[in-house]
Image 1 (cartoon, each protein chain N blue to C red):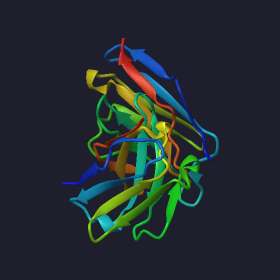
Image 2 (tube, rainbow over the protein chains, first blue to last red):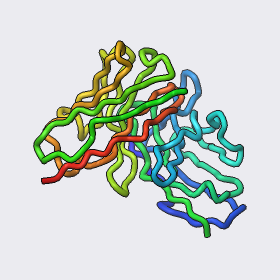
Image 3 (cartoon, one colour):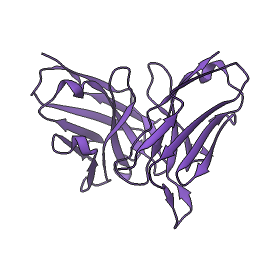
Length: 113
Length: 117
């Protein structure tokens, strides 16, 4: 199974500042045929189901603000919130969908400092 | 509008079985792979299972293979998850979610299963 490891477990960032979340997979999730990384990022606000933010490691889902960006390839990935807003308080998860079981990272809780 | 509505959760005793349902609407259900994801209270997301469009192929998380069975009825636009021999550690919100091939793009609100004597 591909193990997804996120860091940090939590972080507190001032409004308007940058938040950076890391995700590492135990095996590459890069498909060499199409050059896509099968890595998604999800946002889960309190009491709500998760929401897909980023797919293919770096493509924003329709309607997602451009302050959210994803980067990385192979086994190392990053979600960046360039200027944290109050509505971004949530838990963020990465997930690999390269090979079943489609494992999630443990989550990163983002709060306002 | 895409909607996924789970049902069938509740309080059950250890060892009992349960069938969860997810009613889909607002999209061509039979054209999408579907997944179940669960979340224990205060914990992270755990992928459970997925099923292909015609219901002939399914995958499961290692720890759930054998007690969990995913299925679908495309005529009824409904996804199912049968869980047998329930354990307290199965207590969780179970989410139904659509696979867009780009990721899990639509999620239901979830149904809570509580396993306790």
